[in-house]
Length: 253
Image (cartoon, rainbow, N blue to C red; front, top):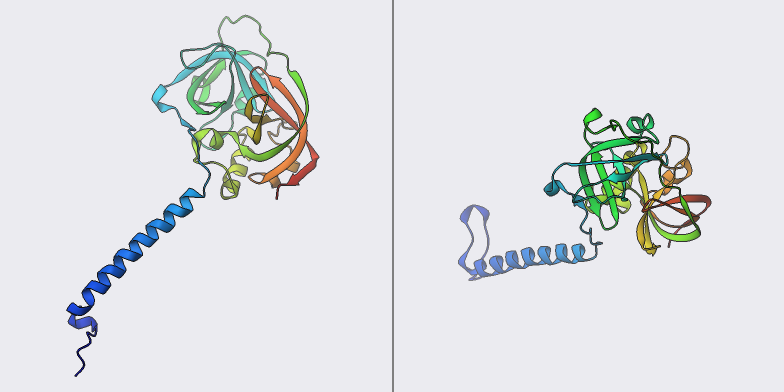
């Protein structure tokens, strides 16, 4: 008879193998944890973007503009939203606010909802119905600030939906988020271009759409991919808007 320990399932673990099995189990668990940590370290930092439920419901007054994505130029703010700030607007979930905003374009409105923030990118997710967006009573006639042309730029970065990028999803960017981003934009969420280098101090630019579409049709296939492009940049309030020359699009190696 051999003195070497031999494992037989129905007899239990021999004493001579217990140390080896325990050591192997510890090594496997530690190895899996180390691999997970290594993979996590290669991922981009999702940043500080988030729903600001901690601030409570935000209600502000401002002038509504369509690009065709709806934005609000704040004329009466609060302790969290300054007068003169320009907010992108969205509905709840993966829904935009274009349909609700169209009838109020160019008017002074009251907007109420939850703020999303990431860096210099701010969005207000509106409450449902007139509780979220309605014409301001007894408001003086007002017009949106005149756009300021900032010239033609060549940029590198990523086309994203503004809501997930602002913090509804983390990280809300990258090829793994492509289907979600396309669905959000198709439903009217404002699209943004996230630049690798700031433009006039801004890292996020609202993309100008065509007609009633928040994103030019030629750009949908490029969402969530790193690209280079050229376009005209203009300042609407304190928000930069990018009109893309689709003929200049190139995938970034």
